[in-house]
Image 1: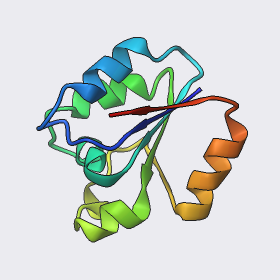
Image 2 (image 1 turned 90 degrees about the vertical axis):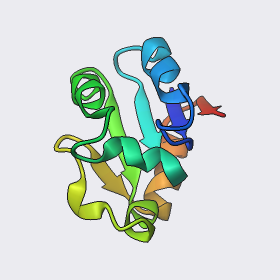
Image 3 (image 1 turned 90 degrees about the horizontal axis):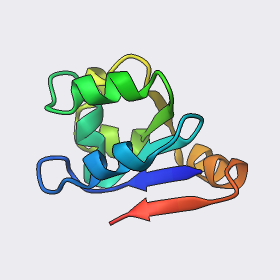
Image 4 (image 1 turned 180 degrees about the vertical axis):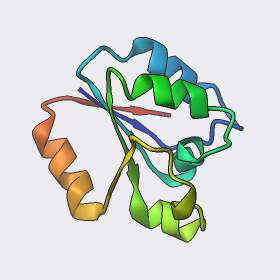
Length: 99
Protein backbone atom coordinates (compact mmCIF):
# COMPACT_ATOMS: atom_id res chain seq x y z
CA UNK A 1 0.00 0.00 0.00
CA UNK A 2 1.10 3.54 -0.76
CA UNK A 3 0.23 6.13 1.89
CA UNK A 4 0.18 9.73 0.62
CA UNK A 5 0.32 12.58 3.14
CA UNK A 6 -0.07 16.19 2.01
CA UNK A 7 -0.69 18.02 5.29
CA UNK A 8 1.98 19.69 7.38
CA UNK A 9 2.74 17.85 10.62
CA UNK A 10 2.43 21.28 12.27
CA UNK A 11 -1.23 21.63 11.21
CA UNK A 12 -2.70 18.17 11.74
CA UNK A 13 -1.93 14.80 13.28
CA UNK A 14 -2.50 13.09 9.92
CA UNK A 15 1.07 11.84 9.60
CA UNK A 16 1.06 10.44 13.15
CA UNK A 17 -2.13 8.54 12.38
CA UNK A 18 -0.71 7.28 9.10
CA UNK A 19 2.46 6.04 10.78
CA UNK A 20 0.40 4.16 13.37
CA UNK A 21 -1.67 2.46 10.65
CA UNK A 22 1.08 1.72 8.12
CA UNK A 23 2.40 -1.81 8.12
CA UNK A 24 5.90 -3.06 7.37
CA UNK A 25 6.52 -3.10 3.65
CA UNK A 26 4.15 -0.24 2.92
CA UNK A 27 5.37 2.97 1.30
CA UNK A 28 4.85 6.56 2.44
CA UNK A 29 4.97 9.52 0.06
CA UNK A 30 5.09 13.04 1.48
CA UNK A 31 3.78 15.75 -0.86
CA UNK A 32 2.76 19.41 -0.68
CA UNK A 33 3.14 20.67 2.93
CA UNK A 34 3.64 17.10 4.15
CA UNK A 35 7.26 17.38 3.01
CA UNK A 36 8.08 19.53 6.05
CA UNK A 37 8.10 16.32 8.09
CA UNK A 38 10.99 15.05 5.94
CA UNK A 39 13.36 17.80 7.05
CA UNK A 40 16.20 17.55 9.53
CA UNK A 41 15.23 19.28 12.75
CA UNK A 42 11.48 18.88 12.29
CA UNK A 43 9.32 17.64 15.14
CA UNK A 44 8.73 14.47 13.10
CA UNK A 45 12.36 13.68 12.37
CA UNK A 46 12.76 10.90 14.94
CA UNK A 47 9.46 9.27 13.93
CA UNK A 48 10.34 9.34 10.24
CA UNK A 49 13.83 7.96 10.87
CA UNK A 50 12.19 5.10 12.79
CA UNK A 51 9.62 4.62 10.02
CA UNK A 52 12.40 4.21 7.47
CA UNK A 53 13.30 0.93 9.19
CA UNK A 54 10.01 -0.69 8.12
CA UNK A 55 8.56 1.56 5.40
CA UNK A 56 9.85 2.93 2.13
CA UNK A 57 9.62 6.69 2.65
CA UNK A 58 9.60 9.16 -0.23
CA UNK A 59 9.25 12.93 -0.60
CA UNK A 60 8.18 14.77 -3.74
CA UNK A 61 11.23 16.74 -4.89
CA UNK A 62 9.34 19.54 -6.69
CA UNK A 63 7.51 20.29 -3.43
CA UNK A 64 10.78 20.21 -1.46
CA UNK A 65 12.38 22.52 -4.04
CA UNK A 66 9.43 24.92 -4.04
CA UNK A 67 9.69 25.30 -0.26
CA UNK A 68 13.48 25.60 -0.25
CA UNK A 69 14.11 22.60 2.01
CA UNK A 70 15.64 20.02 -0.34
CA UNK A 71 19.03 20.41 1.37
CA UNK A 72 17.49 19.45 4.71
CA UNK A 73 16.20 16.02 3.64
CA UNK A 74 16.45 13.33 6.33
CA UNK A 75 18.81 10.47 5.42
CA UNK A 76 16.87 7.39 4.36
CA UNK A 77 14.10 9.30 2.59
CA UNK A 78 14.13 9.07 -1.20
CA UNK A 79 13.28 12.02 -3.40
CA UNK A 80 10.97 11.38 -6.36
CA UNK A 81 9.85 13.58 -9.22
CA UNK A 82 6.38 13.56 -10.81
CA UNK A 83 7.12 10.53 -13.02
CA UNK A 84 8.41 8.80 -9.87
CA UNK A 85 5.12 9.63 -8.14
CA UNK A 86 3.29 7.95 -11.01
CA UNK A 87 5.62 4.94 -10.80
CA UNK A 88 4.82 4.58 -7.09
CA UNK A 89 1.07 4.56 -7.78
CA UNK A 90 1.57 1.91 -10.46
CA UNK A 91 3.85 -0.19 -8.23
CA UNK A 92 1.37 -0.26 -5.34
CA UNK A 93 -2.00 -1.77 -6.11
CA UNK A 94 -3.70 0.30 -3.43
CA UNK A 95 -3.11 3.79 -2.12
CA UNK A 96 -4.58 5.94 0.63
CA UNK A 97 -4.49 9.71 0.57
CA UNK A 98 -4.51 10.95 4.14
CA UNK A 99 -6.52 14.17 4.25
